[in-house]
Length: 369
Image 1 (cartoon, rainbow, N blue to C red):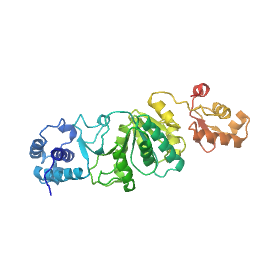
Image 2: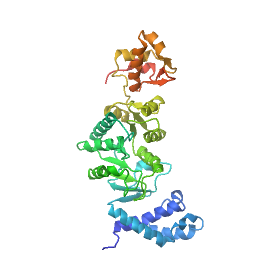
Image 3: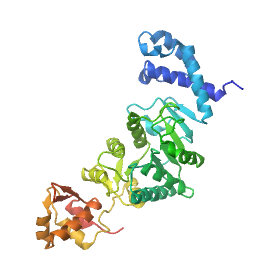
Image 4: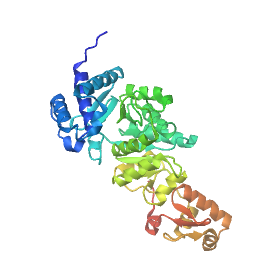
């Protein structure tokens, strides 16, 4: 059996050794910019720093560390995977460099994303059929419009989004950001999907070592990468406590747009607190990407619009009071409010009280597409 490392693997080996040394020792901030002769740096740093950084004791010396990294380089070759380091300006995704703590190394299969527009499409694992179908349809239309779909490869909405992107004819590639290593892709049920993503020119991306299993505490970091790689995050469906909401909040804190489909409690919460714009289809998502206003009232009936106009913008109002204002039965008002809530235009508070989240000017200026 040939035991010789290829040139690429040798470069990977020394780079990985440096990455591990940084993780265990001085830290990337202190070490950057990294020198070209990584092995020499590693040996010098080992002598200079091992007493100050006792966690370096995990390896018996630089030679042992390099041997470990040789095994890792071979594992990457077996997976047909590659890695890139934060100092590799020509390869490391620019979108991740602005993070407070970007991963020192990224492992990937397929084509690493560099340029082009991208939208994150995320949501619940346990989603209803209507939500899965909508995620698929929106992702397909985005991909056909040249926009890459980014998601986490999980069951439910994530998988539906990747499938939708793959269904696009001559569409933009889709990007899977894993919460596990490339050799232990989570969830295992989606391995065939991941292979099709790679075959179609997409990318399987992970900040974790290849055989690292998926762990609960990995997913917040994965969500950060999903948000950072995307211009906009779309939440298709979410409960009030959901990893998809974590991705949305991180996107919002990065100063980027968040959109949500107002059918589920978590999405309505995002819209009600002003952290997301209600959307219904890919047309709305692409309008947001282009900095356009989404007309949220275009499909309302006259009766729905009149009830919305009768509601205070800041203070909640009861169903009975609205019934008096509009000369309608309480049952009819309740039905209209439910419809408006599903459109992300009102939010229920204090039992039978509701408030509008649309300002009066928007109500009177709502037009047609």
